[in-house]
Amino acid sequence: MDEPIPVTRAVDHGTAKLMPDVDRKRAWLLTVDGAPQSYVDLDAPTHLEFEYARRLGHVLDTVAEPEAALDVLHLGGGALTLPRYVAATRPGSRQDVVEADRGLLSLVGEYLPVPGDAGITLHGADARAWLEAAPADSADILIADVFGGARVPAHLTSTAYALAAERVLRADGVYLANLADAAPFAFLRSQLATFSTVFEELALIAEPGVLRGRRFGNAVLVASHRPLDTAALARRTASDAFPARVEHGLALREFIGAAEPVRDENAVPSPEPPDGAFSIG
Image (cartoon, rainbow, N blue to C red; front, side, top):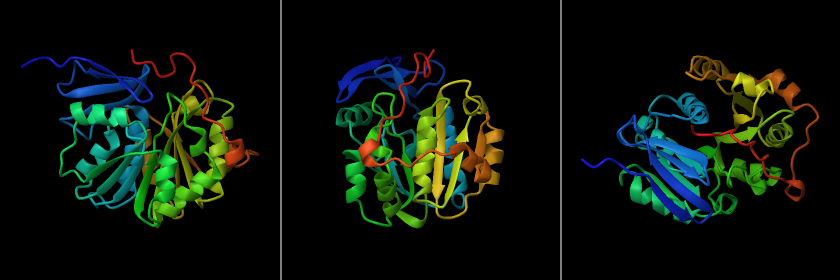
């Protein structure tokens, strides 16, 4: 059988590369302009390679009874790592994936297709525009993992965006976002302040070294109207191969401090990662 070979293609927002993993027969790393975007193993869709993806997976595993089907909306597609994970762990789920880069969707569909019966529907559209036109109360889970290059776009950081997300979620729905920042955490604190104006319950999952300001890194924001099972999340994230902390309650309010909610008129993208922050080797 022929060995898989790397694929490079110009997509709408840069140059995408699919690189096979020499250690896993049908596993691939997707990068866009050199920044790692997704890792998928077509033979093991529950394998989550990236630390932030594992943390999103822990939340997905604890928000509902095991194997219960969910309606999930993904903003940002990449190589469809998390949609594949949900399809494998919660059969019968209905999932919509919104990805602005149609060229990237085409590349992934060609080389890393999802089974036709997986319940995953792809949409080539801007995340916020699609969200604002989506039916109210139509999703159990909303996962935002949108990066323009290596930065979260400004129009996905404001109170108006948070309200649009809340409208689409059902009353007991949960919002998840992959964010990235470093000390003094101006972006991360402003995002927590923004979502605290819309949702009653917040949690933040991040590696202790990031929270202590030692390095730039990812943090997962979790928001809902219902209490989150932070104890179960803390157990899972602490025992992970890449341990993380779950901040909530008073500690999280102290972390937010005097940060102000973001409005559309003063929204900015997340900070540019320093060179090597998300290197792949």
